[in-house]
Image (cartoon, rainbow, N blue to C red; front, side, top):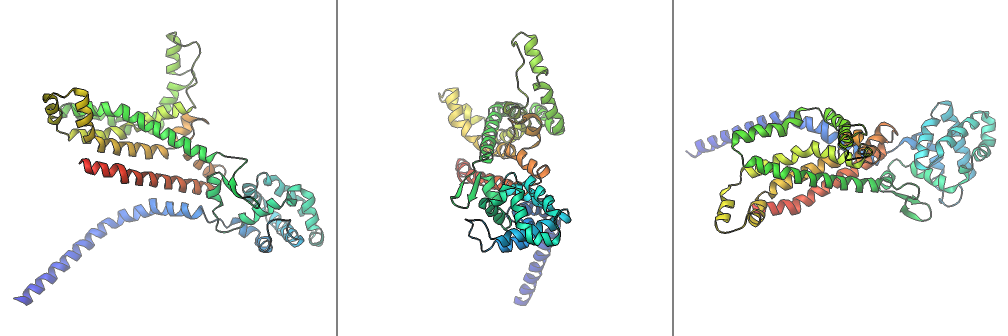
Length: 410
């Protein structure tokens, strides 16, 4: 009897293992899809934000000669001679433009300096290059005689660097003063602050517009509520580009809104609404409003209306009864919708690019600019990594405080 029981237990355990293996095999395609489309791009972005071997591959001998330099005075003549030889070789290989691009990122205004210096060095013979390389380089432009330039070159030559994160935070490392705020450009922290403020305004507007509508839908009979809910879902069936273009037609100087206000005599001249922060907020509120309504509706639909009726029958006034009884029960849906709208709006790209103009740009538009136009993928990766970290931090705060309070309410 004991042997039979052990045998049956072994068969049951084997059957459970087979079921778990079958379940895992069914999940494998989804896991591969998530790894290829989500985990791998994020890992690549994080890697590129700290790994930049381009300068080290272009001028390895110069960087080797700079290793013993103190970073205060001008480097020794050997460094100039070595760099002149390598720049001459890069010019012959048509790679001096790539080096100019990298130097320009490390030290503003160096693109034209490197190209003109490469042309000068290209006229020298090998013998002249060895004897006059340093003099020719120094005579080409005064920037070559600045210690801070060579300090920037030495830092740009590091294969692994955190300089792009410093740039993304509007910071720089000075050879004498150390870490300090950038003096020339301070735009990225302002963009992060502007993005968060706009996302907060969009979230508040979606909550103000979505809460009454969800409350109205939750109080209707199911057949009528489902019919009206189709209208809420209708924007999902319309192209995002079409919806954004419609707002361009409405908000532009000669658009529908201005034409109506001018025709009604309410305005003497058209309002400048398009290509502003106002246009971005309005268009994104319209686009993201369903993401607020749906969580609210799903929670409100499950609330028993007898709670509110009982409070009213016991003498409570409608508004205090709503605030103290009904509203707290809707907080899980409100917080979920707010988190969803806020996170989506922080990383939104298409709508601000089309209707926002310069005033309505968000941090995602700058990330796209560095990836598509300036070809500075490392800075774009650093900006994107900071944005990802910010979103994860906000989600942790939500889960730590708002999520915990929702569990207690439940």
